[in-house]
Length: 257
Image (cartoon, rainbow, N blue to C red):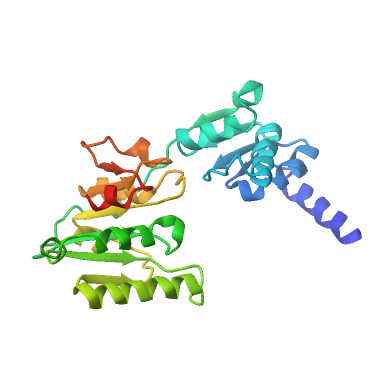
């Protein structure tokens, strides 16, 4: 108890020179109550879409909306999800949207020629990001089409010991052996500019409600074709058929086509 009190007082002494506290994720929502207890104003920048159908995540959304002074969503999808935690109402007035952006100076606008068409999925390897879905779509491609392409997966799993990750690698190997397809798996790289410049098509096949994928903005900034699932913030950064192509992630045929 004494240690807890010391920590609380330390937080107060450290932050008391500020009038406004900025919280950058809903995972820190409990801190809102502490800061409000000491009279601070709190702004929460929301990068997540936490389901209002789940009791726990619905509670987190309501807590943040009820006790913060302002909510800033990174997309309209994020903002609407937060407002729905209280079915709009007076708390919904706290919510505004400021879309995420990228530093365009990081992207070199140049084309690196390759005889084959390169399609790349940038992102952490996990079910929600769509790597399994993409493999399923690749497997449906006719041989004459697949032979003209290089498929790249760039990213790493949360844990190299994750059984699901090794299962996915096995699926990649089986597809390579059975069809002779050119599939590359490349570990996480901090600077994607070289791979992005080599790429012809950026794939964002998320099956989750992705808040606002910045890789779409990076792909568009580098003048690449972007193919993304039609859920979450992707629908706000792609004008269907003009700046990219949206597909239904519930239908693997939709991605294959």
